[in-house]
Image (cartoon, rainbow, N blue to C red; front, side):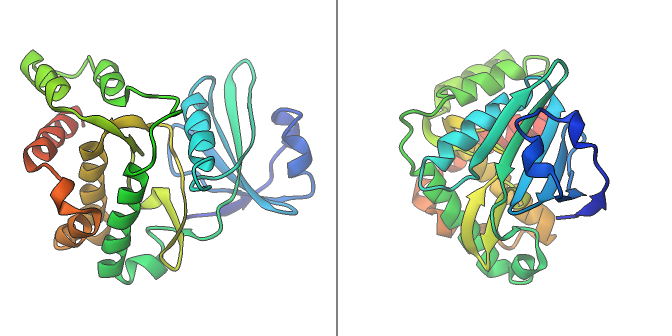
Length: 244
């Protein structure tokens, strides 16, 4: 995860967040064009994500929900909005993301724990999740994509929305300390949905970040191959690849 120390005018953020940033060293740790992410190193480490107004509300809600589930997401310190922007301020999770050299350097073990932790996420109780119909929401969000009505109906019919999904289950979005899970981050696409959405992205990120497709089987075996429906996985793959 890149970090570049910067000077930052803390008077540009909401008053409730400023005390945490006084006398702190601030680093730009952004990895997306849609949001600016700052690492704030004061008395404790924290992350401040800044994006357009309304865009971080889902991430705030899902982060709070998963933090209440055995603390597998960061603690939210503050969530504020002004006329133009959202500000999500969370405690930093100790460790490094899945793309760190300490993890990438042992790809077989990485693929295994990556599958195990996804299974753990999908095994959480769904009661109380703020977004209980994630698959339908994603289909509605992508109405501009040239999906055939037949595919849309097939996805609706086949989807089993019975698991807490991350929604962007990629190696940069899992924090570990020497392969021990410390938390999931960037949860703005999560909710109750079909597990095969996350499984697709898990396979994709291993292929992309490890530059090989030979770790797929380790991932699926660790997840629990008996609960992976090959036809449904192919259906979700077709949908996602068409959307991209």
